[in-house]
Length: 218
Image (cartoon, rainbow, N blue to C red; front, side):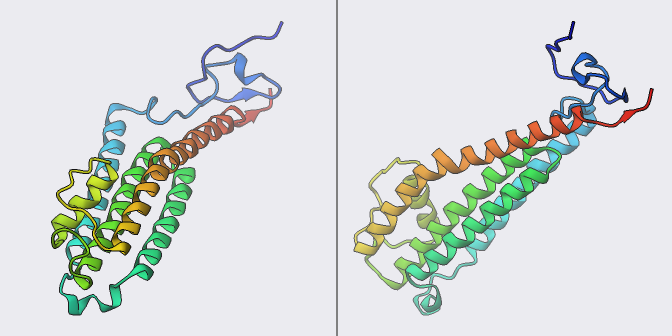
């Protein structure tokens, strides 16, 4: 009779040729994120992951704070072309994150990092547009926007809170705000799901590769 393995194999050993890996749960390696790592290794990997996320968010905020608000400095940053370029950059960065997840030894953690990075870039794109648009089109919002107010408005739109203290007045500002609302739904409903589906697929591929691991002649 064949044997049925109820649990995934956990350790790495060599099997005789022709042996069924599922009948030898102790003889095959099935990498599963950090479950088999030592406490020190888990702490190191998780700490590095958290550090990368903090550095990424800090870098995004630093770049955002460096954007000038004086009208004379905004001529090259003005308008919808800036928004299109920024969204294109976001799409390329998202594709790069997917590639990193597929190649990572810890796809679950990498997917979490990618989610945080993507969210930071997404908010940066729209906060930058609102900031620069208000600088070149005074009165586009119910009150002037500085770096803090522009990011605050972007986050309230993303969170669908809508306090109403800052609202778009000009047509372009209203259109872009509506666009952000729609893309918020896409980001939450699709993009994050894609990241974690890619991570799950990468984990499954690693398990299949481990099951087909090296064999030796009897």
